[in-house]
Amino acid sequence: MTGESRAEARRDVENARADLVATLNALEDRLNFPKRIGRATRRAQVRARAFYAENPGGAIAAAAGVAATVGGIVWLVVRSRLDD
Image 1 (spheres, one colour):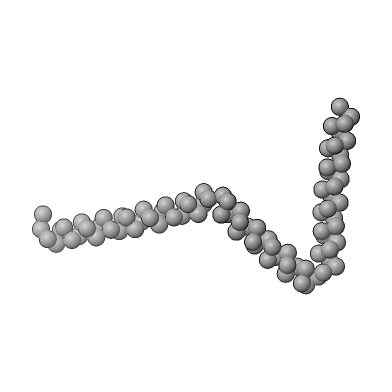
Image 2 (tube, helix red, strand yellow):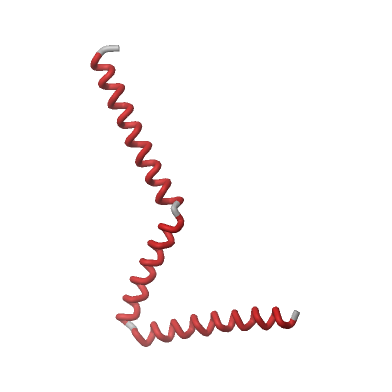
């Protein structure tokens, strides 16, 4: 093997390693659910704060609606369990 072909082979190996590292990093980002959930939570918090800043009354009404819905669902589940 000549020096030039060795250098070329070494570059090919380095390129393959770089591609493998990029692929593994992409897989880690896709499969790391706690990290993805954390990012989604932060995005939702930013959107909720922006909505509250633009429309405080609407944000309070939306929060009250969500609380009433969750409370109603819990009440129905508990009631159905007690009826059994």
